[in-house]
Length: 96
Ligand SMILES: C[C@H](O)[C@H](O)[C@H]1CNC2=NC(N)=NC(=O)C2=N1
Image (tube, rainbow, N blue to C red; front, side, top):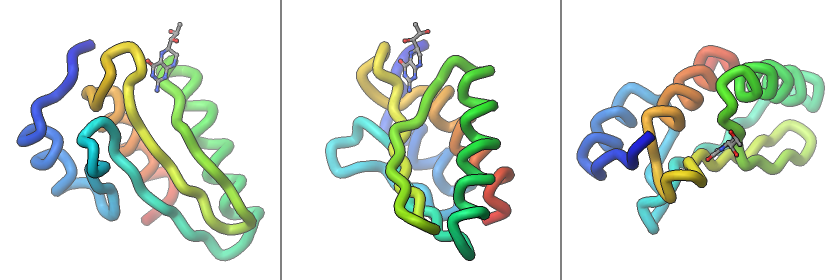
């Protein structure tokens, strides 16, 4: 899968609440905050199952109710449609 153009990524991000293109242009990022650890981990579990189905895995860091996420496609060295698709799933799975 090939890297998306910056303008294509920016257009896709207009539909993705809270997601931003990283300064280096190589990934998209978002910090999710939930009510507690249970809600955060429920979200991570839903995303993990989908990520494995997609064979596309997030970089993430969790502390209690906070989940920091970075999506990039290692094989392509940048942002592809797979990252947009996974971020779209995160939006549904988080309810945010
Ligand atoms: C072999 C396997 O299909 C690849 O390593 C997959 C796994 N998950 C992946 N996840 C992400 N984010 N980027 C990849 O390039 C990627 N590649």
